Amino acid sequence: MAQKKKTTVTVVSQKQIASQIYDLWLETELAEDARAGQFVAVYPHNAATLLPRPISICEVDRDRSRIRLVYRVAGKGTAEFSACRAGDGLEVLGVLGNGFPVEKAAGKKVFLMGGGIGIPPMLQLAKELEAEKYILLGYRDQDLFLQEDLGQYGQVYIATEDGSVGVRGNVLDIIRVNALQADAIMACGPMPMLRAIKKYAAEQEIAAYISLEERMACGVGACLGCVCRTGKIDHHSHVNNARICTDGPVFEAGEVVI
Amino acid sequence: MNTKVTIAGVTLNNPVMTASGTFGSGMEYSDFVDLNRLGAVVTKGVASVPWPGNPTPRVAETYGGMLNAIGLQNPGIDVFVERDIPFLQKYDTKIIVNVCGKTVEDYLEVVERLGEESVDMLEINVSCPNVKEGAIAFGQRPDSLYDITSQVKKKARQPVIMKLSPNVTDIAEMARAAEAAGADALSMINTITGMKIDIHKRKFALANRTGGLSGPAIKPVAVRMVYQAAHAVQIPIIGMGGIANAEDAIEFLLAGASAVAVGAMNFVNPYTTVEVAEGIETYMERYGIENVTELIGAVEE
Image 1 (cartoon, one colour):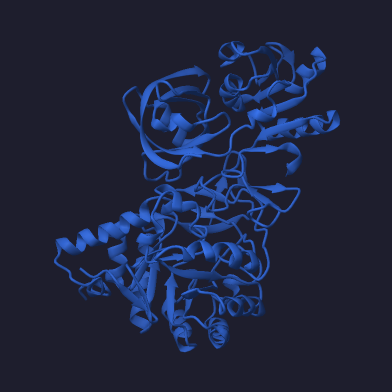
Image 2: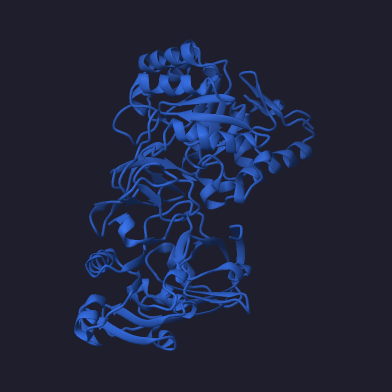
């Protein structure tokens, strides 16, 4: 794996693609080693907001040394990023995390399940994964994003909480309504969705790889801020905690207690 | 130019260390900085057995700083001795092991185990505000600080640094108690107890409710406490609290610290430690300072 570094990247473009959702392309050498499911940590310029914001990588364009971040404005730091224009510089720490184990699902029938702001990492995953892909996306309402990008790589199914588009409900309702089946799952989204996927995968006896999120400080495994509970004693911590930033963010669902 | 400083008979290549808990055992940050450039690496606190730490969220950002309530998660002394010490031995830097415990016996067990290891100094954590038992319970009253310091000193085979809490009424009194009990040095300050509430969810930002405040927001408090302690005791002081650059570090030296440690700012800029070491050299050149020790306590009274 390439060495992690903090580097200045250049904003290539940014546009708003849904309510509070921004689509940011960055030019950076970090693109060379970035993989689906990994993330970068982006630093606000304001010294009052010190800590970097972990944001998953949505898409990688290695040929042009670019990475794409699609993120939601959730507070002061992301609000600052949303004001960036082409040519602006941003401080970024990366590339962080383990990424999705695409090799474990190669050639299989796979559900790619994204919920809300967990949808963006599904795009690079869909690009990298050579498998029969069913892309299951959950949104709050008709304010959709990335569904067209994802449509290039597999059959897209949509669920909305208010039923305005696709199936009313969540990504698991898509499976039920359409009577879909798969050999493996790769997912990112809110914790209730990941819990439901973990349960479903256990019932179906299929592997599920889920990307977790937690408040982070260092992003590199030193501060032990962003741990998740593990079923077995973790190899590094020697307690039932794994570091989401370095041992994850992607875990086999059966390994973590969520 | 001489950047060496000597603390309790241990000579460091330069006065820049890492603050316990912000740097793991150096492994994670060796991707970013050459550990040979650091005066010492101070490890994450280690206990006699593995500790799971607190529930999440464990960290929260605050204005110009952050709160943490990790709860001293650590793999225990056995793993530490097998994995972390051999890793650090590969570098030309001093190894300072931060020791934590729930009871005095816990501390003594770790101190005795480390006596057989090639570790340069021990830093005794009597100031972590995030665990229910031990730690800060020993560091908020002069008599209990005196007691644990003297017991550790009886067992320790390496020089003992007592890490002091800022959550006390009179820091000078605490510094004197540690010195009187035989401490070889002091490190200060640990984090300041704080709290953050999410007004939209009406919930505490940290699962532990309270946490330790660190980062640039606490630097003036830390500089003041180092100054007060330096005037109260003869033993050397390792200063820390929000150091982000060489200017901050020099402020601590001038206030009376013999060395400095970089903590939360490692998270903001993983190169901070080495940048501080280089910046101190630049400052020395600019002001024609031959020995970095000339800066210690050199603020004009």
